[in-house]
Every structure is written in structure tokens, then in C-alpha cells.
Length: 129
Image (cartoon, rainbow, N blue to C red; front, side):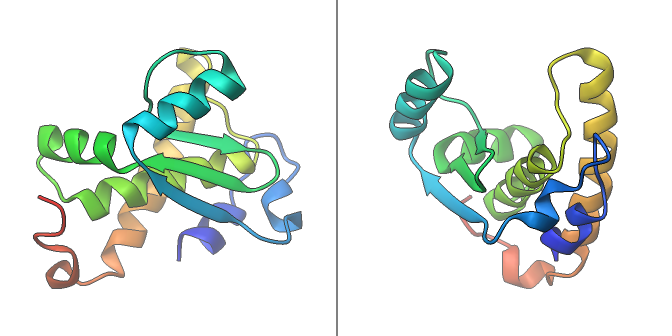
């Protein structure tokens, strides 16, 4: 559900997501994502999601758990948010400054809520809490 929704939204008008032959989502620990963060972005520490232009999205399960608890929702929901975020990056959205971040988050939140509405709450409840 997230992929077709995100494919309709382009941050730069190029719709690159439609051209990728595949999308790979990898769920890792904070230690692994911190290594990826350092190696490819030269930024120390863990983060929630890292997106590569070739179609790979790396998300941290540990960070998702922390934020899910802080925001009072399920880890599944938080991971879904990270995937939507990564897909939007692939389709030309960025969050480097406040204005672009606000724009991206408006689209992201709308899509995320639609995606979650398609998954019964009973299927998500209690996962990873």
C-alpha cells in the first residue's frame, strides 16, 4: 500500500520511485545503522532511517521501539512510518531544511495514516511493545 501511494507523490517532479526495478527494506539494530550512518554519510550515531538512491531503505528496529514508546503507538506503526519516509526520499523529497521537512512530513503523515488504516489494529497491536 505504501509504495503506490508514495509513487504518486514527487518532491521534485521526477518520480524516480516509479523507475526503480526493486525496493529493499532492511531492518537492523542501532549498532548496524550507526555503522552505515558513519560509513556512507560520515555522521556518528544511530538514526531512524537511511535511504540509498538505488532503492535500499535501512531502518532501525531499536530506534523504532524507542520512538513508538515515546509517541504511544506500536513498533509496527513506527517502522511503517520509516518506510514511507524512505520511499518519499526515493521520490525526490528531502528534509534538509525546515520548509522542505514540513512539506515532506505533511505528505508522509497523510500516506502513513492511509497505510495504517488498511492494516487491522488487531494485526498490529502488541507487536514489539
